[in-house]
Amino acid sequence: MVDRFNILFVSASDPGQGAPHHVMGGIWLASRGWPVHLLTTGPADRLFINTPLGRIPASGIPKQVGWLGKIGWQLHMFWQLLQVRLKGQTDVYYIESSPVTLVALAALLLVPRRNIIYHTQDYLEPARFRFRAGVEKRFARRAGLVICNEPARARFMASNYSLSQVPIVVRTSLPAAWPTPDRDPAIRKDLLASLGLEDLPKWTLVLHQGAFSDMRCSETLLRALALLPRDYLVVFTGTPPNSLAEQLARNAARNLGLHGRLIFANREPFDELLRITASCDVGTLLYPDDGIGNFFQAPGRLTEYIGCGIPIIASHFPGLELVVLKYDLGRVCDSQDPSSIAEALQLIGVRSKQRQESERVRLTSIAKGELSYDSMAARIETYLLSLSHDK
Image (tube, one colour):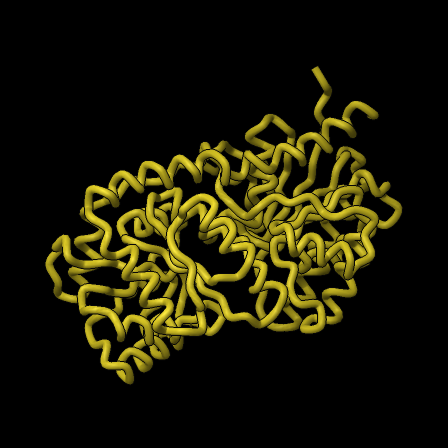
């Protein structure tokens, strides 16, 4: 048996809020028996994080707003990393995403390359974020292992940053053991009741995870909805009542004559989001063609949707299209063209209820199999095992 050793997983995300994808590397390794400690944004008195895959030791750095607050957070993170180094009990520093790279670059000075892992799920158009990209480039070149979440992003990142190797690819997805709910008639009934509607088989609930946003082609989706029968409704999540996002969505709907066809489900916990997802009929993965980040997407929502048994419509960008067509996950469309989106939605909406139920079983199986986090993350464990052999 190979001796396993201490891993400090560092992320700017808060695993107690929203989707778990940014800390999934730490969660997954801990579930495999590696001694992981999470250092993330969160309450200062945090001692553990409870996840469906187990309980993980954790420390939190309170989130702060404004520029001074962000600088304070960075300084706090820097001090925490220095303290960990001084204790000399950590073998591997697993740094997740670019918001932490500036701090990590300074705090991990002289740490051997092979003891640093850098994992990014948000590699974006470098020209838009020149300073952040410059720091990320330096840190990625410091790391012994670099991980990206999409093959084309990884190739571009290797060329743009002059990395010695192309980053390994671990898609943003849920592990096979992560629980996903069945369709819940009570949730569906509540969603429809918010519009004063009865829960009838004719309704097709189109799920738009997240608030109204240009980044998710929300207005174009509503323009597509205007081309479809009134049986099609759109469900927005993550939209607080009376928020700017809700106002924008309602204004767009009013201008398009979509009264009574938008549902706002403001439920924050991730398990609740999955319950809503399983109770809808189709999920949307629509992005503008505005740069590397959106053109080469590998969103965590993909396995959230299919893990809950619902098909998707996605932008017809090469990476997304390949996955959707290869595994028959739904339909692709031109995310800038309302008629193309409407056609994709109709092709899924006309499926019989019997076929929808059989599809749920098949899609869930794919999410738990070929597209699960486990199917790709084994390469991280292989790297760690090679280090532990050399220890």
